[in-house]
Amino acid sequence: MKLDLKKVNLEEFLKYKTLYYDKIDFTIVRSSWDKLSTKMKLPFVIHIVGTNGKGSTGRFLAHYLHKKDFKVLHYSSPHILKFNERIWINGSDVSDENLEIAHKFLQELFEIELLEKLTYFEYTTLLAFYLSKDFDYLVLEAGLGGEFDATNVVENNISLITTIGLDHQSFLGNTVEEIASTKMRSVDNKMLIGYQVFPEVLESAYKVKEQIKQQRDKDIKIIEVKEFDKYELNTKFATFLKRNLHLVIACLNELKIPLDLKLFDDTPLFGRCQKVLKNVTVDVGHNPLAALVLANEFKNKKVNLIYNSYKDKDYKTVLKILKPIIKTITIIELQDKRIVEKEELEKLIKQLELANNKTIKIEENEEYLVFGSFLVVEKFLTLIGYDANS
Image (cartoon, rainbow, N blue to C red; front, side):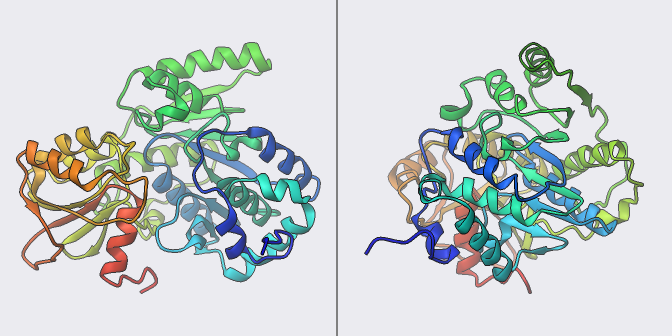
């Protein structure tokens, strides 16, 4: 029986949608937003673009704005355990009820052709837009792209540029400069550039500024965050989180919102260098940049790594970077066609002369790091019966 996209609930609708794709057709989400924009007014848009650190940067910012009594929506992706995590409204994940209300509105508004062609991420982005109507701020995290990302279909007031490195090369380019340029061409008015590993990122920013001036006759403003130890932040935050916080503080200064550092202390950072047990840290990172910050975070320690990777990620470099801190490694089994073949990973583990555990067993006197992707963290948390609300 053919699914009636005009009538099914959101859960069934999203099952039908394309979650992963090989090319981006920006015209579909553009047409959809053109229609939706006649029915609502967007809040002030803060667009977060980069390779690593988008999720924590967005949550720090949204949490702070909420604590200052602004109405704020934070849109991020992907989720770990439940779809609702993607849309965080005024301190909580969006309710099933509000998701369904937004879904029904879009179902009635869009013709069947748009409903069929929109991807999973595009449709989810449009849900977030609708749910942010009449708010003060929309903190909008880009997906894997920049210029042609679904989140870039709306004008952004400020863009925060988190750390940029090599990832998603098939979509974004094969060099740091190409990737940075693709991401930064999403900027509409002002970009604040956070901590960077590669000097090409800053060079690209000024090249993109000139391109935008020539192509759109718009003079965007560039602000570089240069100090990353300026503020005394809670010692519980990992070093890379403190760097992300300095970018958030620069944004708050631009918004002329008074600063109270203590308001950051209880920010919920699900899956971002998070202690889920006293001796177990989980992190949804998956690329060499993420591996570098974790290797630094656990330096002078030895951890038991619970790991797996998508086959299109640079898992060889990741494990080479992490090798100095690895005591043992255990491959967590994942049922997904995008995951690297187990035999390939075992071969690499042997080449690196790492001790390979065959089963996951958490011992009280050992330290564990669960890392490799959102899927890895999701599977592990499911195995231990973790409740995000407890």
